[in-house]
Length: 284
View 1 (spheres, rainbow, N blue to C red):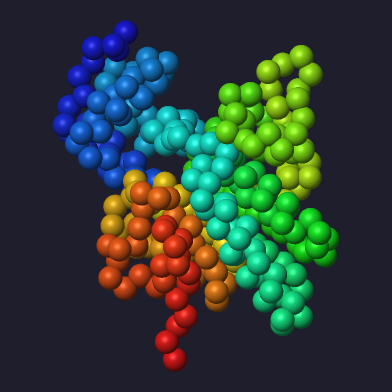
View 2: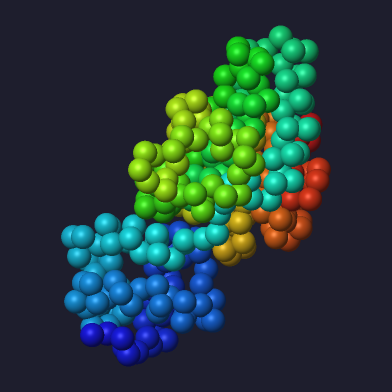
């Protein structure tokens, strides 16, 4: 019914501002057709005749909060896969894990490793982190590994929590990982993550743009890849400061390979490898 409806500049500005306020995502003018394509079916489903009506539904209807979560899922769906940007996982195994292992031994500290997958989408990144961490520390059973995986897309988070993927979705996995950490769902072209990985991860909703960076403990490693590229400078700055606040004194921050902190003159991080940063110590 709404296939040919017009999306006026005023309506685009209304929705653009609303999306920015809720997610920190800044939609440029050229994203207007993208927004139309993603939301047109929602207008039809809700029997709405304009994008202004849709905006009013989001902001005034009792079901607006639920619809907002649906909308966020539609506009944030992005590319993800197991071991995406594999160089990061190699760096973890060859550099980062050995560093924290050596540090724990030298200081006789309780061996713990806390990781945050910020913007985990449907879980592939978090499970990839769990696989490499479990592989590395399996010979050190006293080590406690905990991964917090967060996203603003509840649909993606629910898939991540289920830990169920198609054969196509696990195609990027090295065969050894597939055999050890997944089990086939009987009678279906589906594979389920084994409990040995699931027990390492807690999946939660978290909005990087609006939620407070207050956690029970500091993180040793934060993965936030291909997320801040969609945020404007002001929100990016706030997120980077949040990461600094929640990282341990020598923690590592991993960004996507197309992202960097070069635009931030006073970014409190040191570049260690391409798109891999280390928390800069406070000056005394």
